[in-house]
Amino acid sequence: MSQFVIKKLPPRLPKTDVDALVEICVKAFVTPEIYDLTGGDDSLRGLHFRSLIGAANVGGGEIWGAVEVATGKVVSLALCVPPGKRLNKTPEEREQGMNELMARLSPKAKDWREKIMAGQMFPFFDEALGVKKTWAISLVATDPDYQNRGLASQVIRTMLAKYKGTGDLVALSCTTELLVCCPFSQP
Image 1 (cartoon, rainbow, N blue to C red):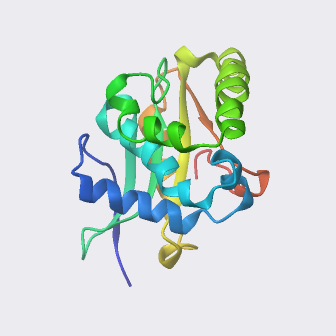
Image 2 (image 1 turned 90 degrees about the horizontal axis):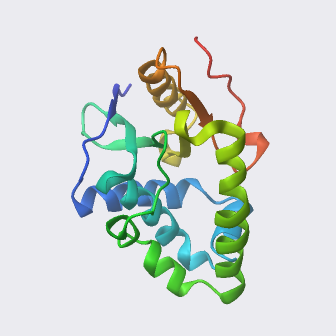
C-alpha cells in the first residue's frame, strides 16, 4: 500500500509540476458546476484551473498536497488564499491563465464572472467572512485513481493545524453541498 506525506508545496513550481496539478483537477472535476465557471465550454476547464493554481504558485496563495512517497507524485491538492488576498489581482498572477481565460470566455460568461462572481459574490464573502481574517480554501482535488483514501481530508486537516491558534477563520468553498461530507474539526 502506498504511503503519502502531506506538505505545503514550494512556491514557483516549474511549469511541468503546475501542469500535473491542473491535470489532477481536470480529471477530478467532472460535475456540471464546473461548466458554469467556464460558460459551458468544456475546453476551458484546464485553463480555469491553471488560472487558480498558477496565481497561487506565483505568490497569491498556498498549494498543499498529498505526495506519494515512492514516486514523489502529488496525487491530491488544496489551494488556500491567505487573509487579505484574492487570487488573480496582480498582473503576474493574471498572466498565469486568467487573462487567456477571460479572453476566451463567451461574452455572457465573461459578464457573469465580472458582474456576479467578482462584483457580488466576492464582496459578499468579504463582508460575511471578514477577508482580512479568513483563509479561503478555494480548490480541493484528488486524482480519481487515489480517491476514497481520505487524502484530501488529510490535506485539509494539516492545513487547519497550521492555521489553528492564529485567530483567523478558515473557509472551505465547494461547488455543491454534497462535497461537504466530512467535518474538519479536530479528528
